Length: 270
Image 1: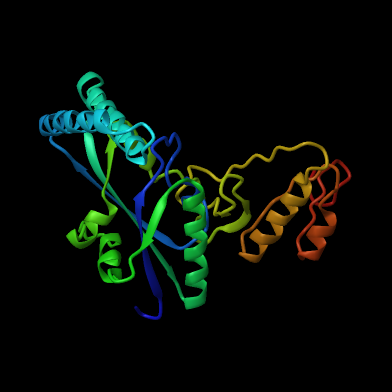
Image 2 (image 1 turned 60 degrees about the vertical axis):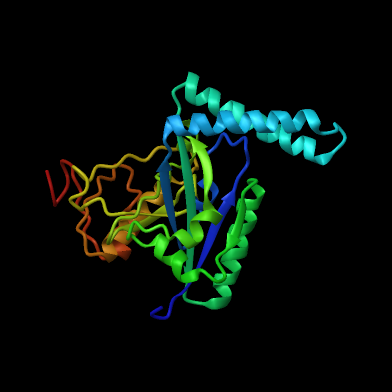
């Protein structure tokens, strides 16, 4: 669309024991993606009734299975999960939700898009998550990631995953600490997600333009300060430097600045 290629990935399952933010590794990257979360809260009393019925049926099946059969392990997992969910709802006042996660990837180049998709699949699979490409549902997939609040029923059955209230914390998306000010200058890279940091200290976003630079000897404080001076000079911002050790004379001359000497024998300022 409009010269941009889009592709949608559907997360179908993830590890039963997950104690970290689900998509942290994806959000921390600089990949062009849109992520859509849908939550559907289930009726608590109906859920307990269905779980009790399910536990009774599976419990009966477990007694009939031979311990050496593969069906026994699957039934045992299902039985224990159902009992755990029922206990959390009844004892810890948890609620049950259906969770749907869609990831929409986009790029101006088709080969680059395929590369990014493979990268995302590798990252998610390393976290124990199962994903599918929406091959024949791309239109529905991109609609689910647009701000239309639509979760098409044709792909809901694929993406549906039950989760308790406590597990919803793992889907909190606002974890990126990127800083990008319009018309800002490049400061460095974010140590948490390697994103580029651009700051415009003179915009209305900040109460003042004060700034402190800390670091050990030889860490590059002076170099960084001179770099800021050069970049702000290119933007036409007037700057004043108090330089008792005359460290900035050369940069002032190279930038065609004015040197004002302050002292009892100075011809500029007494």
